[in-house]
Length: 62
Image (tube, rainbow, N blue to C red; front, side, top):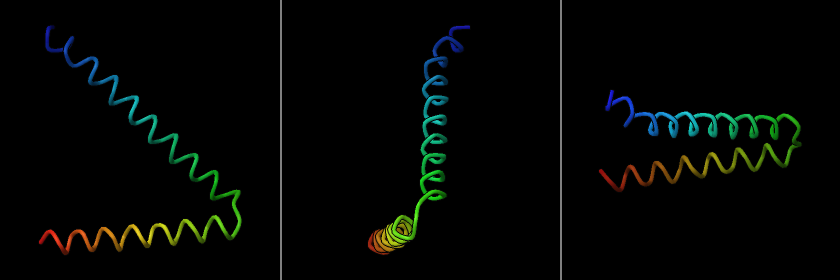
């Protein structure tokens, strides 16, 4: 019983985090679906830049 009481705040924070992430994803999808070429281009360029930075960071940490 005590364990369940201690885990309740953690579970609530986890649920709030998941809902927040889902809301962000839906917002991004809505923006992309109503956006023009500029929105799509900046999204693709940003994702490519993030992948390059991730690859560089992984190579440095080897």
